[in-house]
Amino acid sequence: MALFYVFGAIAVVASLLVIAQHNPVYSVLLLIASFGALSGLYVLLDAPFVAVIQIIIYAGAIMVLFLFVVMLLNAPREETEEDLARGLATLAAPRVRTVGAALAAALAVELSWALTKSGGESGSFPGGSVSSVAAIGRLLYTDYAFAFEVTSVLILVALLGAVVLARREAR
Amino acid sequence: MPALADYLVLSSILFAIGAAGVFVRRNLITILLSIEIMLNAVNLAFVAFGRALGAADGQIIVFFVMTVAAAEAAVGLAIVIALFRHRESLDPDSFTALKG
Amino acid sequence: MVTPLLLAQLGLTLFVFVMLLNSAALMVYFERKLAAFLQQRVGPYLVGPRGLLQPLADVVKLMFKEELRPRAADPLLFAIAPIISATAAFAAFAVVPFGAETTLFGLLREPLRLQVADVNVAMLVVFAIASMSVYGIVLAGWSSNSKYSLLGGLRSSAQMISYELSYGLALASVLLLGNSLSLTDIVNRQAGTWGGVLPRWFVFLQPIGFLIYMTAGIAETNRAPFDFPEAEQELVAGYHTEYSSMSFAMFFLAEYINMVTVSAVATDLFLGGWHGPFLPASLGWIWFLVKVAAILFVYIWIRWTLPRYRYDQLMHFGWKVLLPAAVVNLLATAAGVLYFGG
Image (tube, rainbow over the protein chains, first blue to last red):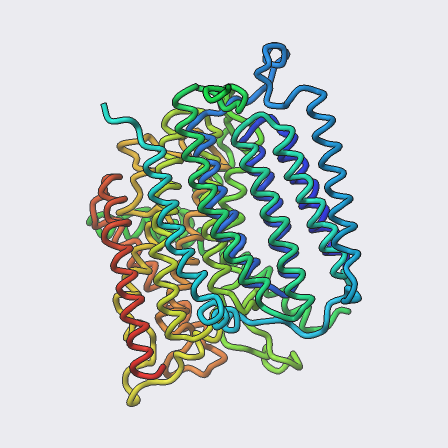
């Protein structure tokens, strides 16, 4: 239980810092920390495969991609007073900020209420672990085989799209 | 022992944080990062439900969500790069060419 | 509740940590002596008998150097990058088993696995932590705020993530043969011999897989012939140009320990781990050490024999040669397992 609170706190604090940081490199690194905490939560939920996949794919590949793009674009780091005055701030105007934060808080409250109000399960987990990697593999290739194949086409399309979109114009 | 409700509350908090990031920040890359936070919150909810129902389906859906997130991040970042080359700016408010 | 088993496990963790540090020191000596013999000279011979205390002298020298930081460097990231590299290197070894279960000559009631953490998805954990070590390098390159470092860091991390694909596919081929993600199970599947002569190692079933794994491993650890990002002639020193003293030592340490981890995982996956003739199972770790030493010897041999790949040749090789080879190997292994019934 203590571990759940530790990981949960790390995830929430890191995510809050991600959206509050001005320096995009720090945001990416904090998000990686948040993903690590989520990976720990997955281990607590008896899903070691998903935990490791989270590190490999999210923290190890997608975030590297983000980091590369941030570094190559040399994204603006500090936000000075004159930037704020010129409206080049990376935070929206104060009113938008408060309304946005209020909306987000309302969303959090609504979602928590809606998700915990569901009748049926008392809420505590049944005993016994859910699955092994072999069971996941079996399900993936039988019940979800079509989705699996479509996903591979999706990745191919994304690959082509990313290469074409980021290409420099031929002179 | 944490109950299902605990995980779901955590998931909704993370989702709201991601949504706040999309509303409040004016930097394209941070907006994309906030979308990733939202997707992760959803993944957590899926795995928690899968565990509660005793099925591995939650983990399989997470697998697909991660793949889609990867594809979306790749294409999104390619678009950001193309936009940056055009306007030298990462502020979504500076891309107003389609404005009526 | 403190049981003898718990104490033994803590002791084992400490033991593995210290041994890894020692192995890095040994590798320094080993490399310099081997390089010397390959180049027909003597190598270090002044410090200690036959130069054996040379690593100690190197450590002392590095400790006394001044710790520099460029003024324009980002202080937090500059400090964190070597820590990330070193931590990832040590952490990857945590799930590698190096011996059979032992009861420490009957002191323990239940057998102790010679593995710091016994995880049943161990192979994936090694892969995951290897992909985290990219961050140490890319952050070092960026935070130094110098063009050599940035170029070296970006090239090095691009190389690492490219070769991770072939690395993973080689792991997947072994997974097909071993039918489990746990490294201990895979090693135990390689016990015994065929016809009393040939050991049941996976390298005989998967020679191409072994070569792909070793090539990808060499590229992952940024060693020659894939060490363009830290080529002394082209890029000063690549991503660790601006580092000195202990931070530099940490990068060095991380590189050697990554080499040891790649060799140890290769031994577990392909060379039968701690199984070998003539020795009882409880002394299997001796065989493990022998095999890891053999692979490290080949590592150093390759470095001082082959010329360096140019960066575009390197990327071409990784994507257009090694990756298709790994995919074909995986398909062939799958067909073989299906046909011969596993």
